[in-house]
Image (cartoon, rainbow, N blue to C red; front, side, top):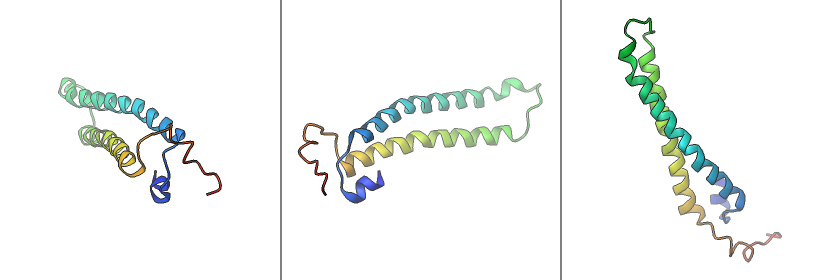
Length: 100
């Protein structure tokens, strides 16, 4: 992404495929956030079990880090759209100059 921005290049099919894969991975991120919230809220149900004192801080840390992943991914989409440009593959062959 940084190379595309610094060299002022057009988006290519590889970049599009990576972005589409990140859309699918974004669904996994939201599932992991849901799973972490469910684990953290089920903590009081296991009072009679021996649970380490570091469980709750680690669960909160994991929830925060899992929540940052979609934020970074969506910001990457925003940066690509604003700084690299939209995917326009009809005009891609006209702007292709392999000697540049």
